[in-house]
Length: 468
Image 1: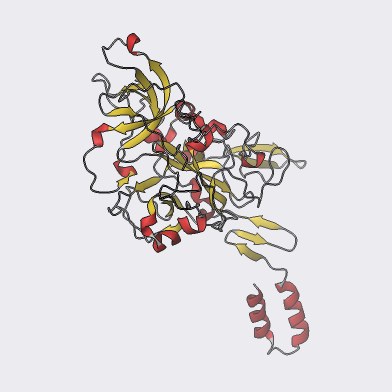
Image 2 (image 1 turned 180 degrees about the horizontal axis):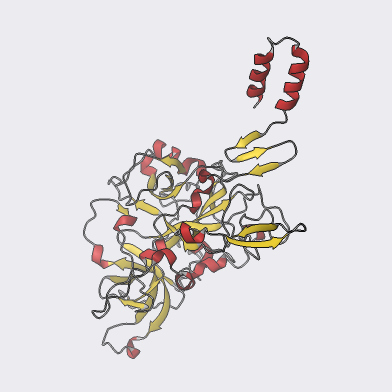
């Protein structure tokens, strides 16, 4: 802006009687509308924010993770009716399969536009002014569709290359063998989200395994019960067009970076340099464990990569690279990406239910291992199918399946149990990616329980519970 004023003054220096002309131009030049950011303009004593497309990139949706688990499959030769996923009510799925989100009170997934022609039609209300003129105003419906953009991941096998390589983060470029994989999700320009963070399901709901939790050489990982206020989502009693700048207690939110999880971006542009928390001080090699550092582990932007199966342009991929000393992921747990929009215009968020909201995520497994939560135990004596050993109902990927244990170790309701995927035990020749993952189907009105015979089995393992 200063350069513009200077050029204007220089262009007027050759005029006769320049002094009064220049003084008037300089006076006016400091009062003209000034561009702060694309879409934002400011005058003498006011500011006006006009949202532009790049500010609203998070409303542009991609593959919905929840849809992958609702795809109908024929049951007893009957083909279910087609589902209109662009207008689907995912709330029953969220309550049954994503119940761990309740540990962040009020947290909800992103809501998006899937049908602009109907969702963006304003409700016009009119009233007569004092002079009889009709004054109209437009109100919009709180009618977004819940959406969790699919986060893609890839986990390396020792001495095997990645299927979807990229340049990598700072840490990966220095020591690629120290990183075992990544999780990736589509994002637009920085400056829109005050915070982008990553969380683990087991951080919220805990990691209960009754058989070892009482032993001194095992970590006890209880569910969160005393979440600090700064990590709780801020909620609006009536959802509005813009996010709150203050929480329900009147505390300032803007610029505070309040958000649960491992922060990948703070202050809208900054990759934090502060060390993340690490479960163990010593790694499996007996040396000091690496503590996650966003500045070293976050890749902006991952380029020259193969297509994961969808075109996300004009967005690009952000990747979080997983160090070999990390206790992330517990195979089979949900990894989510939270985004907290800048709490001021022009970042229209269109009546979202929580700030932050769940923007992207996935259930992260390995090629051979996953896990789930035991929901029901049928003792061997009570089984009616003639099977040997106890039969367990286990929620894997949020879907309930019936599986047996590999031996006679007993498990309790609420335990997170390790599950071996016996149908994929052939030697791996490539890395394992989310595109290789089998999605367990929950067809809602047709069946709630998927019986898997011989493909999955509970094994007596724990993930990241043993202290080093």
